[in-house]
Length: 201
Image (cartoon, rainbow, N blue to C red; front, side, top):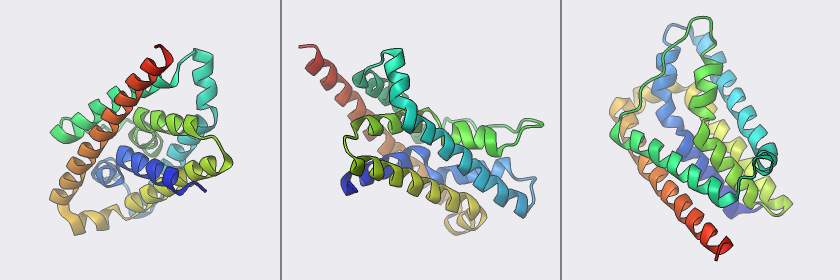
């Protein structure tokens, strides 16, 4: 397994999906549910997220080929998208989602688009497109599983985490995540520009 690629994919997806920052949103959306229902919602949300990410990891390149989208174009779009996400995290301007009647919040909006959102999907496709061997694909698959395991643990024990780190700790983690996401976004945009220049001398 490509350990370096595993580390890059894990850190990138962890920062984008932001398990600590999802905790207060999860608690808000499941505030009226019992402890058992909240636990069930945690694994359902993670199951939906990993299913969506897996679909794009397996078929994402075919989708790009069908739409005639190049990797530099995808990197540029993903970088701009992540930059918007980073600005929301850093400025605190993101709006919490509201519950919708007769809708399982574990599926929407928790599973998608909160967990398996556009940023995570783009990052997954980019990493998969970089893979050239079985070791690379195993590293990406392991990173996806590890990140979603972390997501489940954060959601499953969300009430305990909030009691330990308190709201101020969650805010601090969110700001740090925003800074890291912005750095990833700038790197994607730079790689996009370099790719366009290299392919079109």
